[in-house]
Amino acid sequence: MSASTPARTEDLGLVDGLVQTSMLVQAVFADAAAAHDLSPLQARLLGVLRDREPTMADVRRLLDLDKSSTTGLVDRAERRGLVRRAASPCDGRSFQVLLTDDGRRIAQDFVAAVGEQLTTLAEDLGERDRNRLSALLSSVVRRHAAAHDIDLGAGIDRRRT
Amino acid sequence: MSASTPARTEDLGLVDGLVQTSMLVQAVFADAAAAHDLSPLQARLLGVLRDREPTMADVRRLLDLDKSSTTGLVDRAERRGLVRRAASPCDGRSFQVLLTDDGRRIAQDFVAAVGEQLTTLAEDLGERDRNRLSALLSSVVRRHAAAHDIDLGAGIDRRRT
DNA sequence: TATTGTTATACTCTATAACTATA
DNA sequence: TATAGTTATAGAGTATAACAATA
Image (cartoon, rainbow over all chains, first blue to last red; front, top):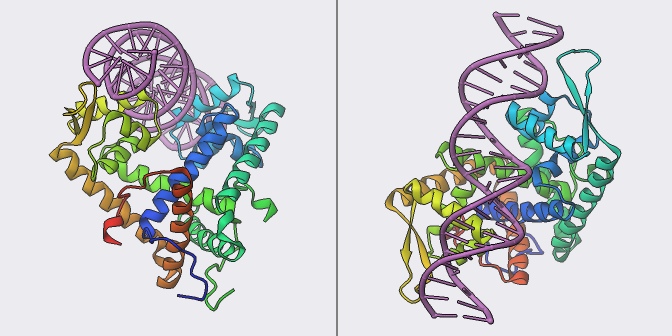
């Protein structure tokens, strides 16, 4: 191992490290969503809509949901004034899903809150290890996305990297 | 940065790396659960029961659920023969939740499957980077657990680290 | 005929409030 | 009175199957 060993504690192993970290991030995500009166899934929807105007089918692919789950999700979000459906100009069967002004404001607040919380979470690592972790996670995610033809989109804060 | 730079791709930034990795791990977790005909939450329940015999209140704390959600979760799992309630010897109001033989078998299968999938996911990193990632994630999780007095338990595969 | 999206149905998850029983 | 757990209720998420409308 290299000069600065990051762990002052017993290593959990990679699998458990991934699972536990994932649960932790999900908890942060869910708390931030709840603080904005959103369900986790609604928060994800708002997140992906920040830089896209996808059709229902696109939303379905982006969030890996069933067709009917997508209908329900967008219905509830629309009822709450967070998004709206707009008829597609090129396909009479299709709708685009768009953020309302309210939805956009909430989406940006939420994303900022998650960013803050996660930044705090990794604060103690120190800059060198934070950069290493960031690079390693990016590598894992990018490889997987490339192998499975997945659109990573803008994520939470890619634009300010 | 040191000799072997792990990322051959654009860095997502730490926040997005954490979120995207978390979503990825959750997807692996959910798929493995579905393959064992479990909901993600039921899979988590079975996971924590592998090395514990918690009361309902303990389950609630371990999974961060409401009292009534815990009742429902254990009801459904009991109906499916995965767990059972046993009267607490020391408190007449309390039950311990235990895996059935079926539940234990499924829990072990599930945990093994998740481990395999996640190992595959990180395979391309190479051993050196895998160890680094493991150490960094452990550090984040351990710090957080210590700061918030959280019981990490056996997780997915801590015993074989 | 194939695709886009909705509806009907059924089950799981989640939380709040009111409740029972024991400590 | 306080705690452990359940029940009632309501809303959100999930998937399957059947359906309508458009391509």
